[in-house]
Length: 450
Image 1: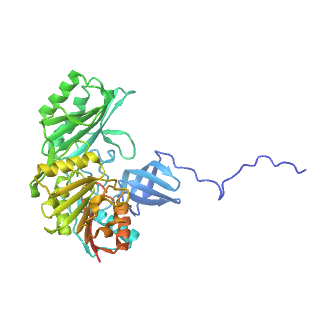
Image 2 (image 1 turned 135 degrees about the horizontal axis):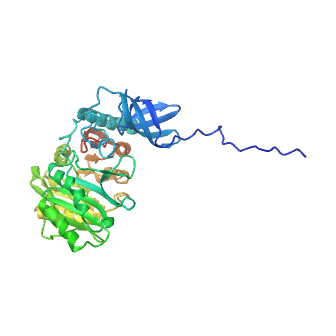
Image 3 (image 1 turned 180 degrees about the horizontal axis):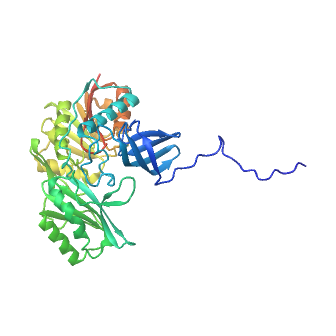
């Protein structure tokens, strides 16, 4: 019998596994180009590095945030050789707060980056280019955000309340005393909010805070335990000082402390007032939202005798302006409470040619009663997952024109493949700069039946 061979160890196929790069390690890198999310891309020793805060052509020192196989995620710590495009970050919290990832890039370059991202997705995934590129829809690059969620967490070990925004690449909270992208009415509230919350008797029971500026200013506090009378007095005094409504979110739905107060936002060009409650979806950039609605109506070119379908209608942001121009609008939304509020918004604006329905729009439309008569035109504004199941049936509705508002170029491109297969052609497309200082891309596309 042969003697057993001792000391052997099994090895994975293909040889030994490369050592993983530890979190926190610093590495000097040459940035080759920008990724679609605005991060710099570098290549070193067979690995691809994605570096936040870096620009093409720069030499930087990057700190590792995480590594997975041959992909390393990192953030810029020092810039040795700066790009000619680099500008000083306008916000003092840049590099720590996770909110505004490309503010070191001038605004016109941000728009160019977003345009490239949209064009690349349409070309690579769908193999198409629009017959016409629309100019970007944009507004002020700062002071645009009318809604913000502020993170609040009790640090039991340090015995302190953390108030601010989430850090880049982690769940840490960055203390924030100013935020340049917030609309001006929310700035003083943001700066005084941490000190007020620290006065409350049960900081460990506090959740997030939501700020909103529309037809009124509102402050919503999420709390996991009942508030004492003293705490409620502190909150009411704070909101009274800032002329803001106080909303509380305990076990049930958010409620205003004063039930007689109204909250909402206006669509001024159409003389419309839409009711809103904290937690509802609303476009955070009021100026670009109005420009987006106006462009959607211009592209869709609704006629007075037409029946138009609005999918993912929300509070009626598109449906109500559309209703002023057509015979009938059928609006569909997945969230039942939003359907109710959209119908109430139509009634309060004296629009009686609208019908609202609840349906799961992640599933095929099937034989829905509201779809049987067909439509001349369709507008849809889906979430990031897109609307693949919905678009598979659009040609059967008879629509000759379709405006697709997207918050994710990847799913827009995927759905474009299906629309082209059904006989639609991509007539026009362009970006919507809803979130300046970020790499987030929103887009609008016009499809016409061949």
